[in-house]
Image 1 (cartoon, rainbow, N blue to C red):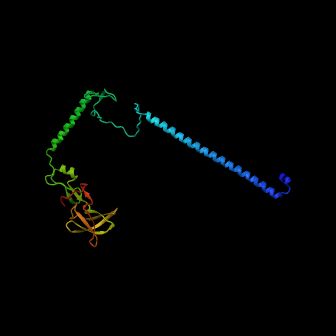
Image 2: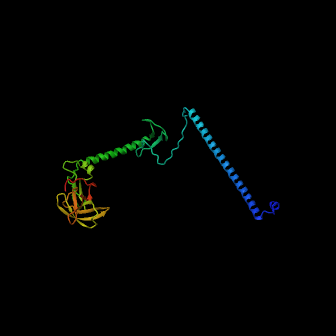
Image 3: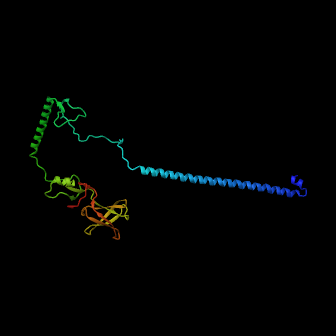
Length: 285
């Protein structure tokens, strides 16, 4: 029993307990509010201190950089040394060199220069045995005499005015004309004439309408028509063969389908040439 109950025996016991509980609850709420106020005050103080610290730091940074910028007015580069290493691969070769060799049979008795020496014009490089030099000169004179004898013997030889083909075929191009230099024609065209060995001319046409083995009509430049056969089709390009008996090399022809619609056109060339590897404009057929 509490003191209050003892002092006032007329107060009921439950009412005294409720009053005690309310007093304890009130005290607890006051302590909690006090702790919250204390924490809030501490947080405000920390925020204020942080703001002041950041502001002070910014001011010092601005002052420091402003002072440095104003003090640095000019600068001068100092002379130094740069070390660079270059690496690579390849093969070294001599540049502007001249190989000096002695004739066959000549014996060198002494070499007067060494590797890496610098020489000037007309400077003596080596000495040779005089006897071997005379022997080499005698052998060279004998070879010259033999060549003179061969030239004298060839003066009476005659050259044929006719040229014969080394293989069977049909002449489709003649590069040489009357009065031309044979040497000039050979240099320019590689041959005096070009033969067709297999009896066919060919034309390449870009089309997807043909397959290997098909028969097509080939219309020549003069309107005449020849029957052709598709030899091959590769990458959308068909190679068609026609007889080389008549049509001229280099003319543009047109491939026609069965209903006479154009499939494409191209230039005739020798299918299996013998002579010049090129296919120039025809001069004769």
